[in-house]
Image (cartoon, rainbow, N blue to C red):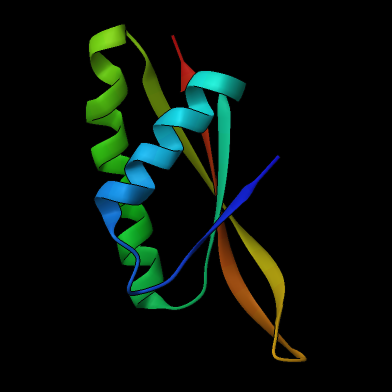
Length: 87
């Protein structure tokens, strides 16, 4: 499965479209965010994606978890957000 990597500069509307597409195809999407700004954009994208899929009777559920990510040879702790559809 493709992991969407979110930064503080990510466009929430674009990310929401990607989430909606993955959820329609695989019933699941996964995102990684490192830092408060990136996490903020990720949560906005989830809220927007819920609006995209709600007319089809799909509700999105978000499961947060910690993730160890290597950035430029350095280990960092980020957030992994797993989004699943619930009908």
